[in-house]
Length: 493
Image (cartoon, rainbow, N blue to C red):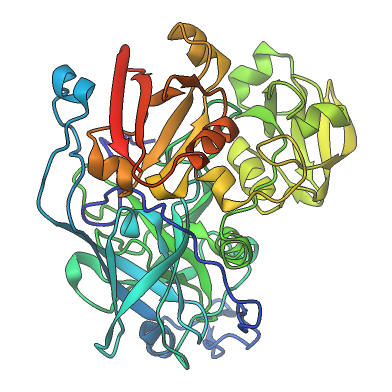
């Protein structure tokens, strides 16, 4: 397989993740996600008299006319850039936490209206770090949008404009999508509004290692992309991949290219993942993700030979989450088992497992079938959340202290030991909150103390920050993995 020199998110100037307050929906607001129920638009078939076979015509005009009005152009603006990519690291400047000032920056992408009430799905990297999000409809009307929620693990975001009776694209079941079927990609590449390209589904379940990952409990990023040869370019990010039903089969997200422009390989998040993420953001303000608590890898011939496996495909269990966080281990699954089926869905790779489990919430019961030394065994497993229980994750528990505009995560024991630390929480993503605007802190910073009080978990960090009053001086002490020395960042609440 050809090795690409780089993988590009298909948007211009992706920036910092927006992680301010998540917007809760009013209970009385009628919000629904639509699904295709109509028969395919392309109902006419042609008979090839020579072979006696029928073919579907390749006239996509009716589909294009139906879906184009529901694909929007998104411009995200940062009032100021708090950090630069690939910047030189100045230990003196970063030690004292002095702020930098840069001019405004802007990114551009696409979005898909998913219901008449103004809810729009796009990519997280299209709106990340934005102070202002502008949406331009196909009829050239423009509106300010609010970010309802984001999910960096799938690179998806949900935004909303204050309009009703909008055209929208309903979802279809992406599991039913077949390799070789026609699809259209709709978006705004290179700021060329309302562009439609055609191609086929080239593959399913692609893992291209483009999303950030957390190694503490295995991969948190969910990559099981639909691959298409429909032309996708920078600016297409967040646009629609539709099938012959004019239904949403995926959200265009990335391209694989040696140049940064289209070279035949585009990738979309499957609609079944998108719909689950959207439902969670609408209902909870944050994604509720079920966890098996296992570390997995895809079975190949080398792995099968090394561990004397009786199967040549599946998800190989190489380890478990620490403590009581592994629902799979509690259910009876063992190391070196190969997961071959979840409920009735065959599992042929680790990405397929991550995608399938990613559609479930904590507390959901799934039937996991493993192959153990040639024998298939099925275990009922009740999925947990990242904290090791089955409760609902609240936004403030996952995003750190909201006013700081950061997302923090626990640090695994192996990393702590390597850095000679006993405790700490890592800044996973840095938005435009008080911390970024007041200091020169970078994401990846491991916070060990808040005003000399050690913090061992995200929960402890949240509790310490909630004690701080407006105007109070706060000093965060910690270190970086790539520059292991102590840093202090001071700011006022």
